Length: 158
Image 1: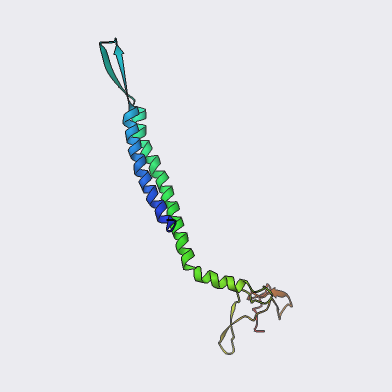
Image 2 (image 1 turned 180 degrees about the vertical axis):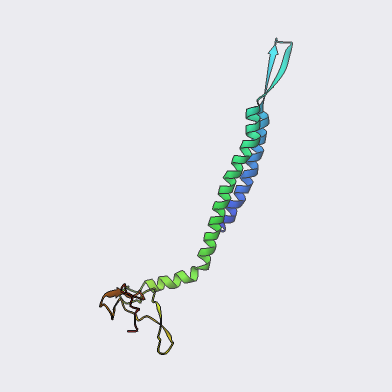
């Protein structure tokens, strides 16, 4: 009943659009023409007046407003549907990351470790697991996730 809410929201929006259009057409004819009777008890005359503002307002403006409301609701339904698709596709990733996040932050390695290329061997390796590193040129302490120092020195293999 509550599965696949995005498609259901879109379906309800489409149904409500057509119900509102039908209601506006009926209201346009009902309130666009005013009927009244004049005369006495036995000889009354029927008069019908046309109110163009109400008639055309209901027939034109009503469906336009309904369309805009349906468009917003359908867009929301697509947003819900896309969010559910993303949640379903990342379900395995989130369970793995939640298991990794249960380890204390002091014992776990950082989420991002930059890649480095050793010029002598042309091998690519990950930065060592350390929270800080010291620049060999200027002696400045840099965060472990950075690849270079502010002085321009590139991080060397520790």
